[in-house]
Image 1: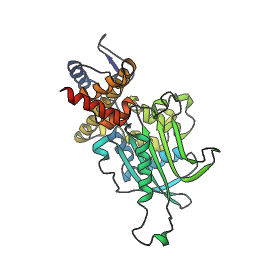
Image 2 (image 1 turned 60 degrees about the vertical axis):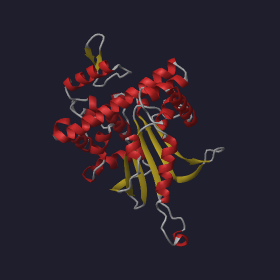
Image 3 (image 1 turned 180 degrees about the horizontal axis):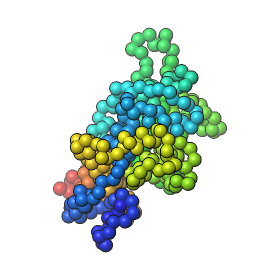
Image 4 (image 1 turned 90 degrees about the vertical axis):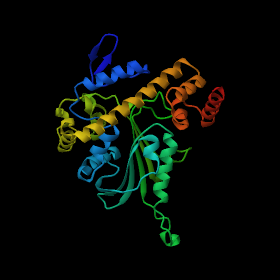
Amino acid sequence: MQFHPKDNKFNGHYSLDFGYKSDNAYLWEQLILEQMEKPRYIDPTTDYGFKRIFGSEVNKDLLIAFLNGLFRGRKTIQDLVYNKNEHVGEAEETGAVIFDLTCTADNGEQFIIEVQRSTQVNLKRRMLYYGSKLIADQAPKGKRREWNYGISEVYVIVLMDGFAMPDEENGTNFLHDICLCNRDTGTIFYEDLGFIYLELINFVKVEADLESDLDRWLYVLKYMSTMDKLPVYLRKPIFEKLFEIAEYSKLSKEEREMYDVSLKRKWDNKAILDYARQEGVEKGKMEVVENLIAKLGLSDEQIMDIAEVSLDFVKKVRGNLSKKK
């Protein structure tokens, strides 16, 4: 539902319309959040929700079904293994969730997939780095000549929630399936390195428009936290399991606390983005960057992506602010 301070009414869906607020308004909003009735299902696009649904061995059938929907018949995954690899500093810097997987297809071939519920910061460059790292990590420490660069396929899959693909602010595509190709002819140059971006803000299909399993998965990811029961059009064993796992009432006290913190973090991030976008419409880039530094205390990299300016520009503004103190 949305809370509107002007008329003190709750309307519609269970989501909050955040903008930049004073400290008093923010405290008032937090008090209201505490009093609101909790949704029946958790939000799978929060860090905690994404991990709970897709991040454990016992629930890997959910992730397999989701990934098969994404590949749209190009591949059929039969099994996967969660690897223990981590990106040092990633969680601390951006709060992103990352799964590093070794997948086995129905034809026996194996390939590596990294799945992320990612933030906006340095998105394209960061994903290119992760994909390259997954390739480089396959190299043996010795006997390189015998290995002969026998690298497996690598795919990086990114769930983007609440922000648009960089350089495509007015785009309408919710699925970006990227590979290396010949710039002039469009012919695929190398098939075995791919990037799949899911831009949820562009997924606007309603129930009657859901045709594929991918449509159903994206609809669930975007709207499950607003539902009060499993819809008829999702009555499949895999979705029945998903909804059972996602029930808020089945979380332990500790799990509820972790989820609530994760949900608040998502709302806070949305508030920052909304504020920055509104400022960007009303003011020049320098004022936007100054306010992001002074009022919100963001890092240079976060400001660079939110305000769509260069890193040198952010550092210059930060330096000027330091001189004024």
